[in-house]
Length: 450
Image (cartoon, rainbow, N blue to C red; front, side):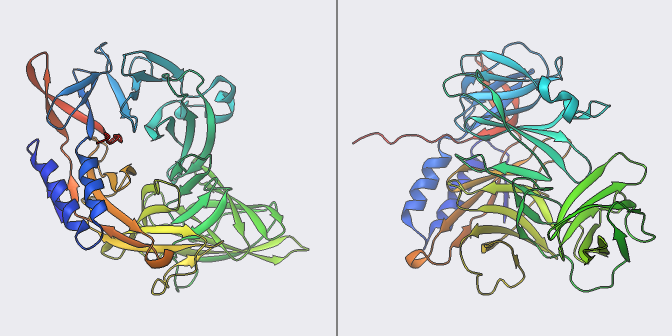
């Protein structure tokens, strides 16, 4: 069930109802936590090109900017004490501003990284997205090709805007998220692979199987250093770059394009690419055929699953115990929870377990569209963005994860998805104006002593 509401209070009430319904029969503490959480959510709102923090009732809590300069990609920090954005008149920079209106600008691509990370067109200098990974960690998303993006995590010092800002991590994937309180990054690609460190050369920990049966479109025996263009399959030139122990390095270059993917594949495993026109997913299965002759057999297989296997949404649990993502299977969508260190879960035999990560739990979800981003607003609420190129469309999904009896199999419960308003009527200098909602934050509040 999706609850879409137009009034300022109806969506807020609908969220409370869904949280209470979810909590029935689970735990009363979850009811208290969820209702306390939604009562202090705040919206980042744009009015006449300036940024405000507003309550759901339309009260202005903070005015971040007063320059009336057009801005894009604005985001609010989890504590609602800072905002980040790109000023249209300074597209090569990003800015952070605190609740006192103190603003600092920083280069999107640091000077010592520019030659290495920018292509000749300067594409990487223009961000696709700017968001807060955690209270003091910004995530900058750069264009890196149809199948992937480059994620740049920047640490923000406590008690200031961004003094002491520094590079934290630079990785590539379809979507990447940094573990809370850690430098560990998880990435997901369009083929359903989840890696720790980097989608291209990190440690693969989990794969959604999408190639089952069917004959290969092409089978090639390729020597190290040799370049081949298959007669069938997606228009990618294949080159075996290297063999090291059981790991094969493949270079896949799209014909007529500068896009190149370097993939590290364990012998017998595969990497994926997306057909540029069709959007279909193709698997390149690589096996060492003759180690002495440095020959690799590559089979190209087209997925028989729907074109969209996973969405771009990827989120760590609030305390970093595991990862959640959206999985599509035929006509249904699921919220998957994967964790390390447990045995396979009975009844979930559609999962390939790699390096001790496995499907811990899953729940069916009804979505209004593809999930571009998702993150935990509180310990029991996921914020999902299902918008498009025209702008964000936020929804809240109540989530409760329990460890089961005696620390056994985790249980995953989800409530009804509640669509949040895309605009709020805000009172500015005594006048009600319509503000565009750009982001949401639900900062934790301390309970007063009784």
